[in-house]
Length: 331
Image (cartoon, rainbow, N blue to C red; front, side, top):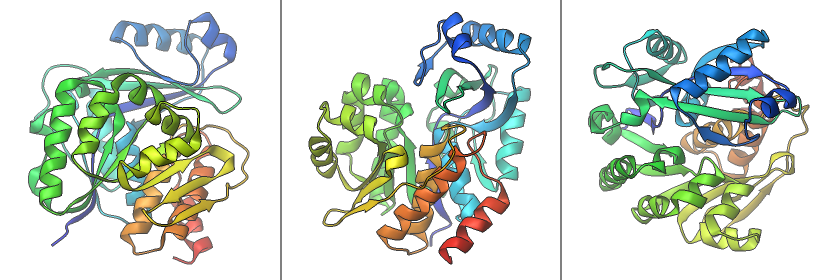
């Protein structure tokens, strides 16, 4: 019997989101528009610089897979998240926020260390730039996996960021194998172009274990196929998973299920912050599949949800937003 609709695994990070200028990024030598792994000292340096400027800040439980679990739960799915935190104030904030969002959580007994944090810097053009200190999440291990909950789930959802480390790749491969043996479907987000560009071998290890659904944006799909041709990227994805969804911002999305290709138009919006758009798309899409809706509606629901999160500051929507979206689609 299925207890959870989605079991997500990823980096447990406290998101610190701030509005910044292009000048701030340039002055502090921050590469715009990508995720960069940094050490604790570098992240602290940036936070100190931001505090001096009194930038708008908000803290939320985060990490890509965590955001997707929250999105699916907000639509009504039962979700579970596994990640590693530390026994500190940020770890407590993470757990409290996640539980409040309706997501079940499992971590081994917190050890000494520091809960990871993702500094999300958003410029006026709505582009998000991530500087991530993994902290305790870098030590994610089998202790953080609740096998009973996993085997009682309908979907396993994995963020590609986990595959930037050989040990975590081995863990993910093992978890995928257990899930597949129990009939649990597996979804994978490519997360960022650099994951495919630099850690393609790790990505292939997990994909070869058997992936049912891949989520990616256009740039990630091109990096995955090592090509500039979207047709070649399409073919590479079709050979790697039973189903995939490629998002392309305001141009919409393309969804493929092995036999049918559906192009979903974009939803016009006044972009404020692109952080969390892909995570929201995945959460809404999975919810629609779980609820038994067809591929077209799943793509439309996901696009609508992603466009709304882009239209506001932060990676989450409010309860009334989810109510409004469900009313619009009559679900």
